[in-house]
Image (cartoon, rainbow, N blue to C red):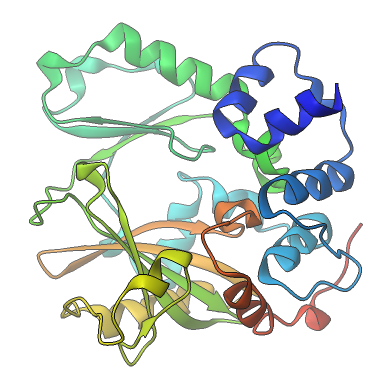
Length: 307
């Protein structure tokens, strides 16, 4: 049985299947679950009493940082109010509709292109670029399944998601001017300071590229794949990058650690989401040296510990 649990914990797809079946992993206490899953993915046991690695500190934050704001800020609908207050409504992707259930969606009212999202999920989006070709029954079935699973909480025990009211939103589809599809700019922020940005590009090719840069546009060899790149490796710096760093810091200001996700198309910046536990703290793409280096930037001493 332990071998079976290990297989489930290490494989997100398998984990999702298991949740829809016997759901055995749900009965494991959060701390024990997190430690075992961490060991399965990162191949070492976490020290949650004296964490040093960023991955360890993210687990510590899950268990002890119970900021009452977080449930609203991980909710893709509720967070819009926070963004509007901090930086203005003009940075929000236009909202088309919000529903408690996909069964309530008025398909006739939707434009030809749109994006459907669950407010409490990760990778739970349906991108529609031609409404007449969308299998609406299949879309409803997928959305209902995502709403029932609460997989973001059960996959990594990210407690704020357990308090989010399941809903569906529709946002306008943003046309990409880049052949590889819409580019994500993900800013890693420590104590309100945007330390670096991860650029996620070529998503539509099936071979997404992840590149990290600091504010001076120096390429950061944070991942194992970066070690093979030449010393002078770079990508063109977007014209709005300095402004995106500024906006990320405005949104991150109250928090010890958060990733601020933005988009930029035709020089217009859009808010994506706030992520308090990137990769749920189980990012095996980072080198161990990177994990330790970034961990040193996150000071847990100023956080009130709530068990």
